[in-house]
Length: 315
Image (cartoon, rainbow, N blue to C red; front, top):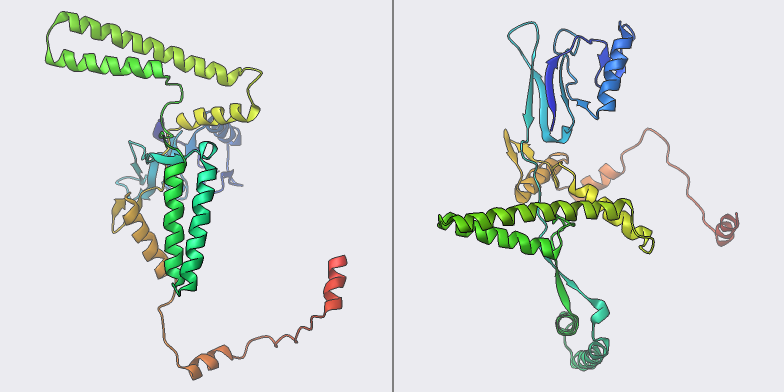
């Protein structure tokens, strides 16, 4: 991440609207500075004046999502101080492994037979006076048992794993890690030599697998589907991101909270504060409040007929 804090003598910029002030001078220099920011993917974050009515002290970065807060505080000279809070490490929420059913390999005939038996059992219980809750729990239990017993499942890998890692490369990485543990426990030069060879081989194979993956994305084979190519392309773009994922940290009582439970509590309090407190009215009070005279006269009653509806539908 690149960031730059500096004083720029370009008072003509209105950084809130990203436009030049009508009375600004040296407009050519201002536009040139704006083009430099746009051409290099940079963003200026300070929007408040830092010296008089002008914003001269700027914060420029190519990753604005890392800045949790930027504000101007009183300074010790004729310039105010720009205060920024930065997340040095992006927050990433790892997805838990998921159990995915493989419906193509399911034994549908057995599931159908079990569901027919369950249906007959539910009808018998219903005729004997069983409650709807009991019948629903029976159906739910039997259906879940059939899905578990007759539909194969697989554990989905985490989405943030590197897509270019092949089984062969993973095998080499595990071998390198085993040799590293042996090297830490022993001073044998042979083990150290084997570890260095394994490390070099892993590095070489990683680079080869990476560039082969990129080549298949940029120049895919003719028999591959276009949709599959685009999916692989956007998967690669996703892994290149350095932004934080998930909900950004929320501040409460001067403390940043990133735990989901704490964030839900903060948002719940915020939503509650936007509504008026609950009040109990008697039927007479409620009726009088609903019949308050308005500023405008009441609308006439609407008469809807079948012929009128058909006429509108035919238009």
